[in-house]
Amino acid sequence: MLIPFSMKNCFQLLCNLKVPTSGFKNQVKSGFILQSISNDVYQNLAVEDWIHDHMNLEGKPVLFLWRNSPSVVIGRHQNPWQECNLNLMREEGIKLARRRSGGGAVYHDMGNINLTFFTTKKKYDRMQNLKLVVRALNAVQPQLDVQATKRCDILLDGQFKISGTASKIGRTTAYHHCTLLCSTNRTFLSSSLKSPYQGIRSNATTSIPSIVKNLLEKDPTLTCEVLMNAVAAEYAAYHQIDNHINLINPTDETLFPGINNKAKELQTWEWIYGKTPKFSINTSFNVLDEQSHLEIKIFIDIKNGRIETCNIEAPDHWLPLEICDKLNSSFIGSKFCPIETTMLTNLLLRTCPGDNELHSKWNILCEKIKGIM
Figure 1 (cartoon, rainbow, N blue to C red):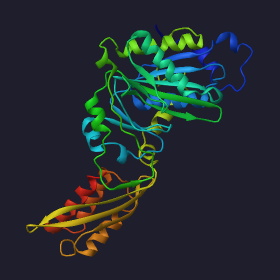
Figure 2 (figure 1 turned 45 degrees about the vertical axis):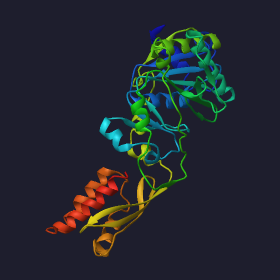
Figure 3 (figure 1 turned 30 degrees about the vertical axis):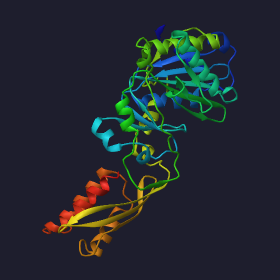
Figure 4 (figure 1 turned 90 degrees about the vertical axis):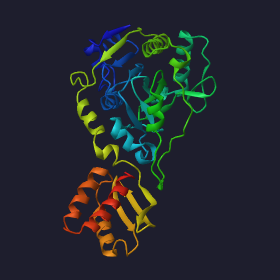
Protein backbone atom coordinates (compact mmCIF):
# COMPACT_ATOMS: atom_id res chain seq x y z
CA MET A 1 0.00 0.00 0.00
CA LEU A 2 1.35 3.45 -0.93
CA ILE A 3 1.05 6.27 1.57
CA PRO A 4 2.50 9.81 1.46
CA PHE A 5 5.51 10.14 3.75
CA SER A 6 4.05 12.38 6.44
CA MET A 7 5.90 10.89 9.42
CA LYS A 8 8.73 13.40 9.26
CA ASN A 9 9.25 13.72 13.00
CA CYS A 10 9.52 9.97 13.40
CA PHE A 11 11.78 9.66 10.38
CA GLN A 12 14.08 12.43 11.55
CA LEU A 13 14.59 10.61 14.85
CA LEU A 14 16.47 8.06 12.76
CA CYS A 15 18.89 10.74 11.59
CA ASN A 16 22.05 12.07 13.21
CA LEU A 17 21.58 9.94 16.33
CA LYS A 18 24.48 7.97 17.71
CA VAL A 19 22.45 6.81 20.73
CA PRO A 20 18.64 6.55 20.51
CA THR A 21 16.70 8.83 22.85
CA SER A 22 14.39 7.45 25.52
CA GLY A 23 11.30 7.89 23.37
CA PHE A 24 12.92 6.66 20.20
CA LYS A 25 11.82 3.03 20.33
CA ASN A 26 8.26 3.96 21.17
CA GLN A 27 7.90 6.41 18.28
CA VAL A 28 9.72 4.58 15.51
CA LYS A 29 9.13 0.97 14.63
CA SER A 30 11.74 -1.47 13.41
CA GLY A 31 12.22 -0.10 9.92
CA PHE A 32 10.91 1.74 6.89
CA ILE A 33 10.02 1.03 3.29
CA LEU A 34 10.58 4.11 1.13
CA GLN A 35 9.82 4.80 -2.52
CA SER A 36 11.07 7.80 -4.47
CA ILE A 37 8.60 9.90 -6.45
CA SER A 38 11.50 11.10 -8.61
CA ASN A 39 12.88 9.40 -11.73
CA ASP A 40 16.09 11.44 -11.69
CA VAL A 41 19.13 9.20 -11.27
CA TYR A 42 21.20 11.85 -9.46
CA GLN A 43 18.46 12.63 -6.96
CA ASN A 44 17.88 8.96 -6.19
CA LEU A 45 21.59 8.22 -5.78
CA ALA A 46 21.74 11.21 -3.45
CA VAL A 47 19.06 9.59 -1.26
CA GLU A 48 21.31 6.56 -0.91
CA ASP A 49 24.24 8.74 0.12
CA TRP A 50 22.11 10.74 2.55
CA ILE A 51 20.63 7.69 4.29
CA HIS A 52 24.06 6.06 4.51
CA ASP A 53 25.63 9.21 5.98
CA HIS A 54 22.87 10.38 8.35
CA MET A 55 20.56 7.61 9.51
CA ASN A 56 20.90 5.56 12.65
CA LEU A 57 20.20 2.05 11.34
CA GLU A 58 20.68 0.16 14.59
CA GLY A 59 17.64 -2.11 14.67
CA LYS A 60 16.03 0.09 12.00
CA PRO A 61 16.66 -1.39 8.52
CA VAL A 62 15.45 0.53 5.49
CA LEU A 63 14.34 -0.63 2.03
CA PHE A 64 14.45 2.04 -0.67
CA LEU A 65 12.59 1.50 -3.98
CA TRP A 66 13.41 3.72 -6.96
CA ARG A 67 13.29 3.89 -10.74
CA ASN A 68 15.03 6.20 -13.18
CA SER A 69 14.51 7.68 -16.61
CA PRO A 70 17.04 6.23 -19.13
CA SER A 71 20.49 6.28 -17.52
CA VAL A 72 23.70 4.32 -17.33
CA VAL A 73 25.15 4.00 -13.84
CA ILE A 74 28.78 2.97 -13.50
CA GLY A 75 30.55 1.73 -10.39
CA ARG A 76 32.79 3.87 -8.22
CA HIS A 77 36.00 2.51 -9.76
CA GLN A 78 34.96 2.20 -13.41
CA ASN A 79 35.97 3.86 -16.66
CA PRO A 80 32.97 5.26 -18.59
CA TRP A 81 34.85 5.20 -21.91
CA GLN A 82 35.48 1.51 -21.35
CA GLU A 83 31.97 0.68 -20.18
CA CYS A 84 29.58 2.79 -22.28
CA ASN A 85 28.80 4.07 -25.73
CA LEU A 86 29.04 7.73 -24.75
CA ASN A 87 28.28 9.08 -28.24
CA LEU A 88 25.08 7.06 -28.48
CA MET A 89 24.06 8.11 -24.99
CA ARG A 90 24.51 11.79 -25.87
CA GLU A 91 22.44 11.35 -29.01
CA GLU A 92 19.63 9.52 -27.19
CA GLY A 93 19.63 11.70 -24.07
CA ILE A 94 20.67 8.83 -21.80
CA LYS A 95 22.25 10.19 -18.63
CA LEU A 96 25.55 8.95 -17.21
CA ALA A 97 26.02 8.66 -13.45
CA ARG A 98 28.77 7.31 -11.22
CA ARG A 99 27.57 5.80 -7.96
CA ARG A 100 29.57 5.52 -4.73
CA SER A 101 29.40 1.74 -4.56
CA GLY A 102 31.57 -0.67 -6.48
CA GLY A 103 30.50 -3.20 -9.08
CA GLY A 104 29.74 -2.96 -12.78
CA ALA A 105 27.80 -0.75 -15.15
CA VAL A 106 24.01 -1.05 -15.39
CA TYR A 107 21.33 0.45 -17.60
CA HIS A 108 18.32 2.01 -15.90
CA ASP A 109 14.94 3.01 -17.24
CA MET A 110 11.39 2.93 -15.95
CA GLY A 111 11.23 -0.81 -16.57
CA ASN A 112 14.14 -1.50 -14.22
CA ILE A 113 13.44 -1.51 -10.47
CA ASN A 114 16.20 -0.52 -8.05
CA LEU A 115 16.16 -1.96 -4.54
CA THR A 116 18.49 -0.63 -1.83
CA PHE A 117 18.77 -2.50 1.47
CA PHE A 118 20.23 -0.40 4.32
CA THR A 119 21.50 -1.99 7.52
CA THR A 120 24.24 -1.67 10.06
CA LYS A 121 27.60 -3.02 8.96
CA LYS A 122 27.21 -5.98 11.32
CA LYS A 123 23.91 -7.06 9.75
CA TYR A 124 24.94 -6.57 6.13
CA ASP A 125 23.98 -9.73 4.19
CA ARG A 126 23.59 -9.57 0.42
CA MET A 127 22.49 -13.17 0.02
CA GLN A 128 19.74 -12.74 2.59
CA ASN A 129 18.40 -9.78 0.59
CA LEU A 130 18.52 -11.65 -2.71
CA LYS A 131 16.72 -14.64 -1.22
CA LEU A 132 14.06 -12.21 0.01
CA VAL A 133 13.61 -10.94 -3.56
CA VAL A 134 13.38 -14.52 -4.83
CA ARG A 135 10.68 -15.30 -2.26
CA ALA A 136 8.77 -12.20 -3.34
CA LEU A 137 8.92 -13.26 -6.99
CA ASN A 138 7.74 -16.76 -6.15
CA ALA A 139 4.92 -15.35 -4.03
CA VAL A 140 3.39 -13.60 -7.05
CA GLN A 141 4.32 -16.33 -9.56
CA PRO A 142 5.16 -19.71 -7.97
CA GLN A 143 6.07 -21.18 -11.38
CA LEU A 144 9.01 -18.80 -11.86
CA ASP A 145 12.40 -20.49 -11.90
CA VAL A 146 14.49 -17.82 -10.15
CA GLN A 147 17.59 -18.43 -8.09
CA ALA A 148 20.23 -16.31 -6.35
CA THR A 149 23.77 -17.25 -7.40
CA LYS A 150 27.09 -17.26 -5.57
CA ARG A 151 28.01 -14.15 -7.57
CA CYS A 152 25.02 -12.41 -5.96
CA ASP A 153 23.02 -12.23 -9.17
CA ILE A 154 19.50 -13.55 -9.68
CA LEU A 155 18.99 -15.82 -12.68
CA LEU A 156 15.76 -16.64 -14.48
CA ASP A 157 15.48 -20.16 -15.91
CA GLY A 158 19.08 -20.80 -14.89
CA GLN A 159 20.57 -18.56 -17.59
CA PHE A 160 19.01 -15.09 -17.87
CA LYS A 161 20.27 -12.43 -15.51
CA ILE A 162 17.43 -10.36 -14.06
CA SER A 163 19.30 -8.77 -11.16
CA GLY A 164 22.83 -7.55 -10.48
CA THR A 165 24.36 -6.45 -7.20
CA ALA A 166 26.62 -3.73 -5.82
CA SER A 167 27.27 -2.46 -2.32
CA LYS A 168 28.95 0.07 -0.09
CA ILE A 169 30.21 -0.78 3.37
CA GLY A 170 30.95 2.15 5.66
CA ARG A 171 32.40 2.35 9.14
CA THR A 172 29.14 1.49 10.89
CA THR A 173 26.49 1.32 8.14
CA ALA A 174 26.18 -0.48 4.83
CA TYR A 175 23.90 -0.78 1.88
CA HIS A 176 23.36 -3.37 -0.79
CA HIS A 177 21.52 -2.38 -3.94
CA CYS A 178 20.33 -4.53 -6.79
CA THR A 179 18.32 -4.16 -9.97
CA LEU A 180 15.28 -6.12 -11.07
CA LEU A 181 14.57 -6.25 -14.80
CA CYS A 182 10.86 -6.00 -15.39
CA SER A 183 10.21 -4.33 -18.75
CA THR A 184 13.41 -2.48 -19.60
CA ASN A 185 14.34 -1.48 -23.17
CA ARG A 186 16.78 -4.26 -23.96
CA THR A 187 17.90 -2.61 -27.20
CA PHE A 188 19.11 0.48 -25.36
CA LEU A 189 20.47 -1.68 -22.55
CA SER A 190 22.76 -3.64 -24.85
CA SER A 191 23.78 -0.72 -27.08
CA SER A 192 24.47 1.69 -24.20
CA LEU A 193 26.66 -0.83 -22.38
CA LYS A 194 28.77 -1.70 -25.41
CA SER A 195 31.84 0.49 -25.71
CA PRO A 196 32.93 1.22 -29.29
CA TYR A 197 36.24 2.72 -28.20
CA GLN A 198 39.43 0.92 -29.17
CA GLY A 199 42.87 0.81 -27.58
CA ILE A 200 41.91 1.62 -23.97
CA ARG A 201 44.30 0.32 -21.33
CA SER A 202 43.07 0.61 -17.77
CA ASN A 203 43.11 -1.05 -14.36
CA ALA A 204 39.55 0.10 -13.70
CA THR A 205 36.91 -2.43 -12.66
CA THR A 206 35.39 -3.98 -15.77
CA SER A 207 31.83 -5.23 -16.17
CA ILE A 208 31.08 -8.85 -17.06
CA PRO A 209 28.52 -9.11 -19.90
CA SER A 210 25.48 -11.30 -19.25
CA ILE A 211 22.45 -12.57 -21.12
CA VAL A 212 19.42 -10.76 -19.73
CA LYS A 213 15.67 -11.08 -19.93
CA ASN A 214 12.70 -9.10 -18.67
CA LEU A 215 10.33 -10.72 -16.18
CA LEU A 216 7.44 -9.24 -18.16
CA GLU A 217 8.55 -11.33 -21.15
CA LYS A 218 8.10 -14.41 -19.00
CA ASP A 219 4.77 -13.35 -17.51
CA PRO A 220 2.89 -10.21 -18.66
CA THR A 221 1.30 -9.83 -15.21
CA LEU A 222 4.69 -9.08 -13.62
CA THR A 223 4.58 -5.31 -13.90
CA CYS A 224 6.89 -2.99 -11.96
CA GLU A 225 4.08 -2.07 -9.58
CA VAL A 226 3.26 -5.72 -8.87
CA LEU A 227 6.92 -6.56 -8.25
CA MET A 228 7.61 -3.56 -6.01
CA ASN A 229 4.56 -4.34 -3.90
CA ALA A 230 5.62 -7.98 -3.66
CA VAL A 231 9.16 -7.13 -2.52
CA ALA A 232 7.80 -4.60 -0.02
CA ALA A 233 5.37 -7.17 1.40
CA GLU A 234 8.10 -9.78 1.78
CA TYR A 235 10.45 -7.22 3.36
CA ALA A 236 7.75 -6.12 5.80
CA ALA A 237 6.98 -9.70 6.79
CA TYR A 238 10.66 -10.59 7.24
CA HIS A 239 11.44 -7.53 9.39
CA GLN A 240 8.05 -7.50 11.11
CA ILE A 241 7.18 -3.94 10.13
CA ASP A 242 4.10 -2.29 8.63
CA ASN A 243 3.62 -3.08 4.96
CA HIS A 244 3.52 0.57 3.92
CA ILE A 245 5.47 2.00 1.02
CA ASN A 246 6.19 5.56 2.10
CA LEU A 247 6.54 7.98 -0.80
CA ILE A 248 9.42 10.45 -0.50
CA ASN A 249 10.58 13.46 -2.51
CA PRO A 250 14.40 13.33 -2.87
CA THR A 251 14.56 17.12 -3.16
CA ASP A 252 12.82 17.75 0.18
CA GLU A 253 15.39 19.61 2.28
CA THR A 254 13.12 19.54 5.35
CA LEU A 255 13.28 15.75 5.30
CA PHE A 256 16.81 15.39 3.95
CA PRO A 257 18.82 18.50 4.93
CA GLY A 258 21.64 19.12 2.44
CA ILE A 259 20.51 16.49 -0.05
CA ASN A 260 20.37 18.82 -3.06
CA ASN A 261 24.08 19.54 -2.70
CA LYS A 262 24.72 15.81 -2.81
CA ALA A 263 22.68 15.52 -6.03
CA LYS A 264 24.57 18.45 -7.59
CA GLU A 265 27.92 16.87 -6.77
CA LEU A 266 26.88 13.63 -8.44
CA GLN A 267 26.16 15.57 -11.67
CA THR A 268 29.54 17.28 -11.93
CA TRP A 269 32.06 16.42 -14.63
CA GLU A 270 34.68 16.09 -11.89
CA TRP A 271 32.75 13.26 -10.24
CA ILE A 272 31.39 11.43 -13.29
CA TYR A 273 34.54 11.59 -15.43
CA GLY A 274 37.24 13.02 -13.18
CA LYS A 275 37.07 10.08 -10.76
CA THR A 276 38.00 7.63 -13.51
CA PRO A 277 41.13 5.65 -12.62
CA LYS A 278 44.14 6.61 -14.74
CA PHE A 279 44.07 5.06 -18.21
CA SER A 280 45.69 5.32 -21.63
CA ILE A 281 44.60 5.25 -25.27
CA ASN A 282 46.75 3.55 -27.88
CA THR A 283 45.03 3.54 -31.24
CA SER A 284 45.47 4.41 -34.91
CA PHE A 285 43.44 5.25 -37.99
CA ASN A 286 44.02 5.71 -41.72
CA VAL A 287 43.57 8.83 -43.83
CA LEU A 288 43.42 9.00 -47.60
CA ASP A 289 46.21 11.04 -49.21
CA GLU A 290 46.46 11.13 -53.00
CA GLN A 291 44.89 7.69 -53.41
CA SER A 292 47.05 6.09 -50.70
CA HIS A 293 46.26 5.38 -47.06
CA LEU A 294 48.43 6.89 -44.35
CA GLU A 295 48.45 5.65 -40.76
CA ILE A 296 48.02 8.16 -37.94
CA LYS A 297 48.91 6.91 -34.44
CA ILE A 298 47.51 8.37 -31.25
CA PHE A 299 48.88 7.82 -27.73
CA ILE A 300 47.13 9.57 -24.86
CA ASP A 301 47.42 9.21 -21.07
CA ILE A 302 44.45 10.42 -19.04
CA LYS A 303 44.52 11.13 -15.30
CA ASN A 304 41.56 12.49 -13.33
CA GLY A 305 39.71 12.76 -16.64
CA ARG A 306 42.29 15.17 -18.10
CA ILE A 307 44.90 14.58 -20.78
CA GLU A 308 48.27 14.14 -19.10
CA THR A 309 50.34 13.26 -22.15
CA CYS A 310 49.42 13.34 -25.84
CA ASN A 311 51.42 12.07 -28.78
CA ILE A 312 49.91 12.21 -32.26
CA GLU A 313 52.20 10.69 -34.88
CA ALA A 314 51.57 11.55 -38.52
CA PRO A 315 53.86 11.26 -41.57
CA ASP A 316 55.93 14.47 -41.93
CA HIS A 317 54.89 15.01 -45.53
CA TRP A 318 51.22 14.92 -44.54
CA LEU A 319 51.45 17.09 -41.41
CA PRO A 320 54.72 18.80 -40.42
CA LEU A 321 56.26 17.70 -37.13
CA GLU A 322 56.06 21.17 -35.61
CA ILE A 323 52.31 21.24 -36.27
CA CYS A 324 51.87 17.83 -34.62
CA ASP A 325 53.88 19.01 -31.63
CA LYS A 326 51.72 22.10 -31.34
CA LEU A 327 48.59 19.99 -31.42
CA ASN A 328 50.01 17.58 -28.83
CA SER A 329 51.02 20.31 -26.37
CA SER A 330 47.68 22.10 -26.79
CA PHE A 331 45.71 19.07 -25.58
CA ILE A 332 47.74 18.54 -22.39
CA GLY A 333 45.78 19.51 -19.31
CA SER A 334 42.43 19.69 -21.11
CA LYS A 335 39.41 17.57 -20.25
CA PHE A 336 39.13 14.37 -22.23
CA CYS A 337 35.79 15.32 -23.75
CA PRO A 338 34.51 16.31 -27.23
CA ILE A 339 33.29 19.77 -26.19
CA GLU A 340 36.71 20.84 -24.96
CA THR A 341 38.39 19.31 -28.00
CA THR A 342 36.09 21.30 -30.29
CA MET A 343 36.94 24.50 -28.43
CA LEU A 344 40.67 23.77 -28.70
CA THR A 345 40.36 22.94 -32.39
CA ASN A 346 38.63 26.23 -33.14
CA LEU A 347 41.24 28.13 -31.15
CA LEU A 348 44.14 26.41 -32.89
CA LEU A 349 42.69 27.02 -36.34
CA ARG A 350 42.82 30.75 -35.69
CA THR A 351 46.60 30.54 -35.30
CA CYS A 352 47.06 29.61 -38.97
CA PRO A 353 44.48 31.59 -40.95
CA GLY A 354 44.23 31.07 -44.68
CA ASP A 355 45.82 27.63 -44.81
CA ASN A 356 42.83 25.58 -45.96
CA GLU A 357 44.80 22.36 -46.45
CA LEU A 358 46.20 22.55 -42.93
CA HIS A 359 42.75 23.34 -41.56
CA SER A 360 41.38 20.25 -43.27
CA LYS A 361 44.05 17.95 -41.84
CA TRP A 362 43.75 19.50 -38.42
CA ASN A 363 40.01 18.95 -38.46
CA ILE A 364 40.46 15.31 -39.52
CA LEU A 365 42.75 14.69 -36.56
CA CYS A 366 40.51 16.43 -34.06
CA GLU A 367 37.39 14.65 -35.31
CA LYS A 368 39.16 11.32 -34.89
CA ILE A 369 40.23 12.26 -31.37
CA LYS A 370 36.69 13.34 -30.49
CA GLY A 371 35.53 9.96 -31.79
CA ILE A 372 37.31 8.20 -28.92
CA MET A 373 35.91 10.52 -26.26
